[in-house]
Amino acid sequence: MLDIRLIREKTAEVRKNLARRKDKGILDRFDAVLKKDEKYRKTLYQVEQLRKERNAKSLLINKLKKEKKDFKKVILEVKKVGQDQAKKEEELLKMKAGLWNELLRIPNLMHESVPVGKDENDNKEVKRVGKLPKFGFKPKNHFELAEALGIIDSERANKVAGHGFFYLKGDLAMLDFALQKFTIDFLVKRGFMVIEPPLMLRRKPYEGVTDLDDFENVMYKIDKDDLYLIATSEHPMAAYYMNEVLNAKEFPIKFCGISPCFRREVGSHGKYTKGLFRMHQFNKIEQFVFCHPKDSWKIHEELQKNCEDLYKALEIPYRVVNVCTGDLGIIAAKKYDTEILMADGQYREVGSNSNCTDYQARRLNIRYKEGEGKTVAGFAHTLNNTAIATSRTMIALLENNQNKDGSINIPKVLQPYMNGKKKIVKN
Image (cartoon, rainbow, N blue to C red; front, side):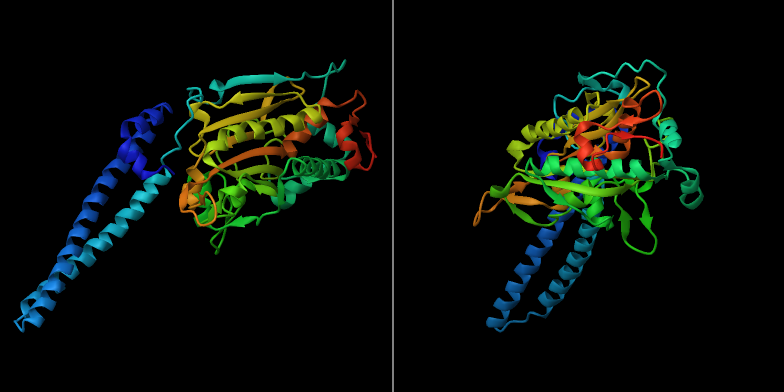
């Protein structure tokens, strides 16, 4: 969330930044915050004045007692002021909660390099790396290949769990695990600590890490419990230090999160949904970093390099786009999407790299100090980037490495993780 003091002191600048999103609803919410904050501060002033009045009358009572004068009238006045104060303080608490809820819906301030645009069609391409192989035959899509090889079962998964679930079998399940272990080894060598997080989060930490609209569109709620299935390991990793003060000497703190992810995917109508691309359950390795504010933009580029190096090692062609204002969401100040090239010649998103600056940390109350014995200096910066979403990566591996006979060549870097196997064939 944004610092309310920043909104008060630099109202015009904040409004100008938010206006770049081309969303009137956001500006309406911003105006609502300003009005609520004005009422809150007026009420706070009234409470402070009542406290002063009560304290002054209490001192007067003590003075009258010492002088052995009548103070009964003043006692009644103190009681009345106390009642007024209690009533105003109750109003103040309600106002503070309302202001907090409005602030949660105000987006992060965007970096100046974020392109203005309406939706994903306006994202700006940054680079392209690699090309599709020359097949010499009409390539099949990944689902056709997997079914023919007998390594996926959708019918039985639909029977027991419904649409959007699959049984991965044999070499496809092994390929999923191979991608995870390869990525973990890769990130550990670059200084990341492996984290296997809780697969459920309470609402309070979840409100700190994501857009509140996600509760309706993305997350699965656990009935009768204050718990939600995680949509990504980013979320429990972001909440790891909730309400703590970190020592800047330990920065950057780099986590490699490994988890299944659960998403309802409400609102995905019209998007590419074939096969493994958009599932309700999938595995993902996530990069997450807590860092000093002065380093976050440098680390943003480092995280991007990590995922690109992974896709280069897997020999998967990809491109990077700078996500535009209309497609950015409210949490990130800037976001790169990495998109893999599939056999049909289309690029599709496989991961996002976000610098959230202090937006998540402020919501989660994660602060830092420059060293032991130092006072709190401010809020940490947080960043997240998908290293590998295995299901979408497997699409490219199956489609781009297919042979005319339907077999699949396994990239060299994954062969040690596939027990030396070089090719997936039908058993």
